Length: 163
Image (cartoon, rainbow, N blue to C red; front, side, top):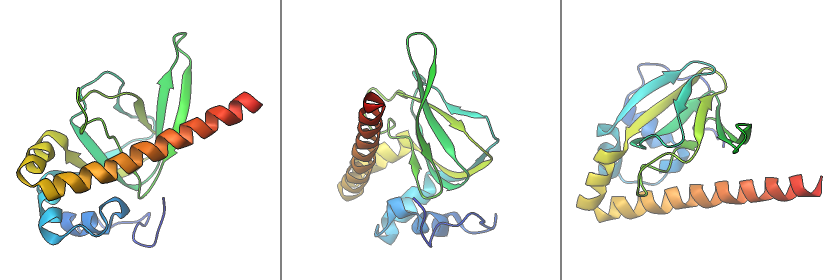
């Protein structure tokens, strides 16, 4: 999901609030909502091949990808790894922080060096309870991501069955 507000190169000194405000996932949130998100955020980097999270681990965060690529993967009962999706700049990584029981459902691995914004899920859930407008917006946006990824997975399954 690339657009003109998400570039591969970002100065390390760009204020976190400004980076968050430019992310497609957070488009049109108001300044107070963006400040709440920025208070729960920090920049992070992953090296190529680094495991970001693993299925079954507690889901206490999500990421806004600034640069690089991340693979969502799952393994079958025989241990074979299946690539579900590749995420890149402008994409959101992780939705399990918002839905009980708050455990990851997939593995995420950096396909290349990746720059992202880390947002702390438990703190945001608390803020969402205090601020229902923010809670609604995050729930709506995360639900759109979940539905989109489900549709992508469904389409790949159909294509694989046809082959």
